Image 1 (spheres, rainbow, N blue to C red):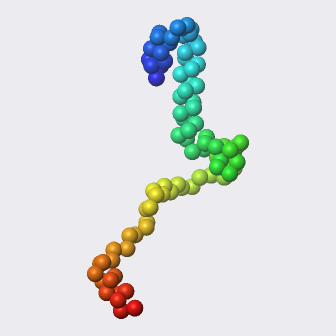
Image 2: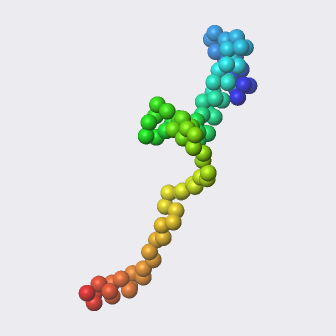
Image 3: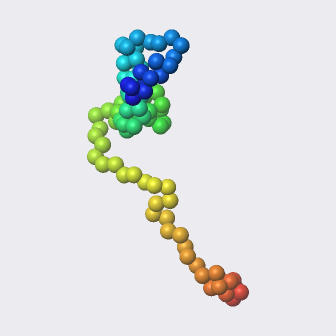
Length: 89
């Protein structure tokens, strides 16, 4: 990431000092970590506070990850049986 920032700086019209580049890289890393870490993310019901602030003294005991559609079973019906059932009705 730092090498990428240095390359961008070399190609810029007005290159920035080394210490500014380090701060930019640190800011980018902090932003990425904030988005990835659960307790640093914004609380969905109140975006002004983080999940950590909402939890306060509470502790996360476990986490469960759900995938869209997980646990839903698709009914498999035979088309011929379905037509026969409708004909009887």
